[in-house]
Length: 117
Image 1 (spheres, rainbow, N blue to C red):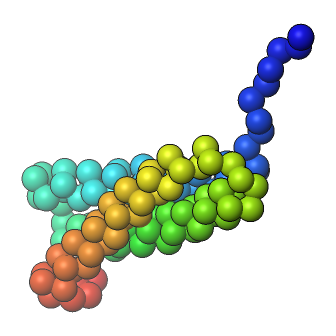
Image 2: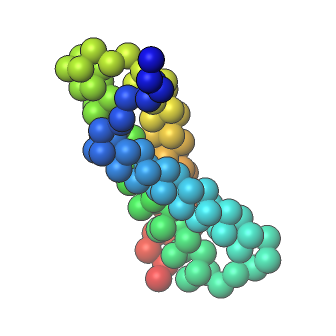
């Protein structure tokens, strides 16, 4: 009896997961910098740049999460590999987070006067 090895994950699933995780960390980092800048009194243009980056990162996170959900569903139905169900839940949570961040940042930009830069 040999050593049992776990099944290898497809390279596309690994790339999508890492990309979505990158957008998630960058979204959190951008929101953190915006919060620090609000407290410490950063210049208005810097705050607008942080908000624009939050919109871009949040939207990219939401789109990447949708792609991850579709990819996991394809792996489940095509390969009959049911271990991807947990990934769908994670992608739904991160996609919702990205959509909320993008919506809030857009709301703040619109309320504060539009383009501002």
